[in-house]
Image (cartoon, rainbow, N blue to C red):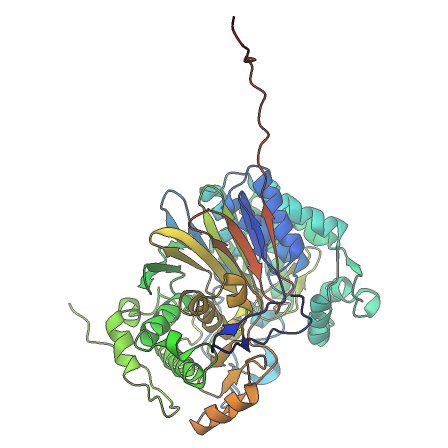
Length: 571
């Protein structure tokens, strides 16, 4: 069914819902790549066909996304790559951004009672003070070096081609440029690329990023050292120094990625989740909410029911209360991760929920010690390797700064830090910045079943949690799961997407429970993923209606070779 608006689930006479979708999956037996732009997904599949594995495909897709989704990621951004290899290796590459070493807790003047780290003059949103030390280039290159089959130069090549020859503006990109226009106009190299002729480009206009093509080609040929200790790092530091920024050439050179074990937890009947650990809060809170909601019959309440939405809302508020108290850089903060994701703690918090009344929650009291704009992709190959990677500039076009002559946009991840001193996530020199990213891999009885990731800042882990629940609890296909209506509640009001069935009645019933509920058009951003049929091995890539996402799949196979001997009949 082809739809031109978000799908609204419809209820049959038996009480079950059917879930029409806007987009369709793409299936193949040889490999699948899905991302938030079809040209980037195509780049990843190109690398699979060239002999690359899922790691090569995912990282090549990310490099391409830094070209065709310029508002979402860059080589000086932040993110996590979740890798599950066929040999059993499980690793999360943490290339998230860091606070500049010259930053102080009182760097910004907070706006009182602002819910989203607002500061005077938006200095943590736009301009050079908003930039954290970015790690995507080093993270991506490390993934290729340690887990890929191809050389970095070959992996970068499709992105170089896209930047050199250009790509057409989509309606989604045009709207993103409109939203960021005032900030882009402040920086000459951003304006000349994204506001050609001093105007917002029309849909179909071809954007060419020649400077960025040169940067990517140099990264491909010289490796990440071109940025970390090389000419690109110097150009960034020089631009910082010229405009009151804090980042130095030395700290760019000193930046390190971390390879961390994933958060691993059993959920449901035979399922196991592999998710990023802190400094991403996403994995822990997805597992925490799963544990809380295991005490309730979500399948019995049904998708979109008042009780089901109420329970999701309450679990989200509990998770956010704990996030505020406990989550930060694991190198500077003692995070009680094992306790937060334990079944026992999940049961304790489930007991706090009142089915008849919405509440506000404090963080849990940890036991005494014994002596989240972003883009995402998934890739899966026929050998059993799977990757889910999420990376970001943070806000759309990040700080809006393009480093002159390089085509490189800079992130604004400093907006993720609490501008109020004395908090768990307050600004501190060199501190790893807290994220909500949730590129997740789910196993079933030990075998890879599906992988998915989403964009949307603080709304990421709640969106991913709901998609996982849609598959393993409500029995949806992955395509239905990523497109179905979402909710969000951070404790400041419940949002439910307007495409929920009978949304006005649902709002009224939730209000009767004490929720301050509203129904926006969408919550969060584009989600994509890959599902693997455990019986046939067939892989299906999916992407949702909230972004330009598209899967690309490879089927077919090699030709049969004519035998060297001809069979005949003997006398």
